[in-house]
Length: 240
Ligand code: GLP
Image (cartoon, rainbow, N blue to C red; front, side):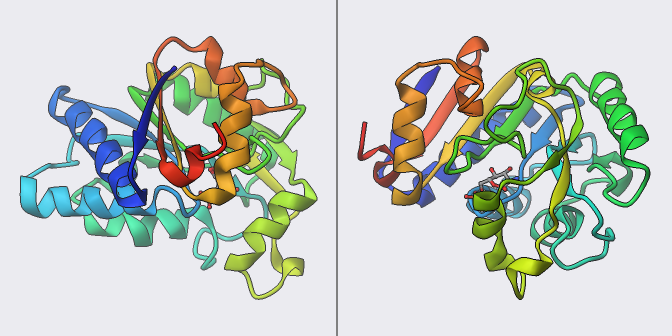
């Protein structure tokens, strides 16, 4: 794992955007793996800027998102489809049919199988963007997830629902379950960038950099992949 320590969140976003844009410019048909959460918002702003200022085009790009809440309609304000539409897809020239996010409203067992097939047939993902949960989750792969897991349904742990409650009017509205690509699905990506910013993530970054590979801290499984870059700001790196 390569570690890039940046001065602040903005630098993390710029560095990540440079890697994403280099990927797009270097390939006729890139497949990007995308994440939600607060962390990649700065990256998405930079990518939008790249369309306007650097002439980057997404016409031939496909995207595959990590996860989606179970039970929220696509149009729900807090669905990850809405998040991606508002923060990225509506602002770049991507073909919406080339953007893949699990459908949280269809039969979930069938949807998991279908989505893993998307990862294999549209993919492999050239560059996967990841954030990290405070408990080390990646996607919605909570501690204890099998490192051989493919796309599956998860019950969200209380701490994840609590930290995501800030986007909903109350914690009761945060879905209890989600569909997430598995750890093995994520590891199929050719290259992975893991972004972490803020003191809130310092403990998780320290645990990750202990290099103790364990299913009880899902992000640590990334040590088994040979092309991962952790892009972190000083606040998130302060306990290392
Ligand atoms: C969420 C998402 C993850 C994300 C993580 C951290 O629950 N499912 O993909 O990386 O939690 O979110 P944030 O970037 O807001 O801290």
